[in-house]
Length: 205
Figure 1 (cartoon, rainbow, N blue to C red):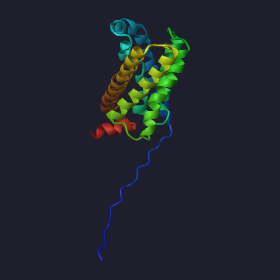
Figure 2 (tube, rainbow, N blue to C red):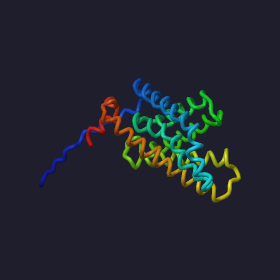
Figure 3 (spheres, rainbow, N blue to C red):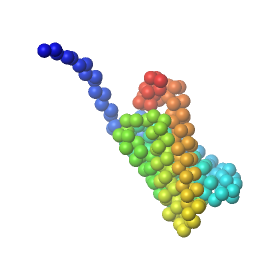
Figure 4 (tube, rainbow, N blue to C red):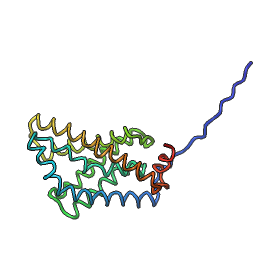
């Protein structure tokens, strides 16, 4: 009778409870992202307006700049609620300073944050590879599209709705997803995220 031995790998338990440092850094991300939102609130029309004039709905290619806060917070904090918190806080900053969308800015923040949050939840807050970041951006983009087509573009024709949806999701994947992942990696390699799992993962690559 031959006995075999197997080496058991230690089980690493992830702590999904928020620490004070998580709240502080997530708040910094949210406020800083809100400042970017304020700039894009003004710059979006001159930049994306010509796209919409070329083909209605194409302007959504730039909407990812309103979606990245939740994805970036989720990638760095890696705790339940981080994506929702980051996006909502950024939207709150935008709303408090004032913009053309008023209170609906907060609704958008919740909807878009949940879109990203649900993707991270599907992966059990354990996978933060680039494709997951892009999927989270797409989730935020899809949530934005659904909200906007109901609230702002009710009754839009099929062509507009289709172009707007495709462009919004692509923008979410590239701007909110891929660029946020690259920003997270760049920050991690500077050492400023050493107290986070994001910083530890950068050391292994």
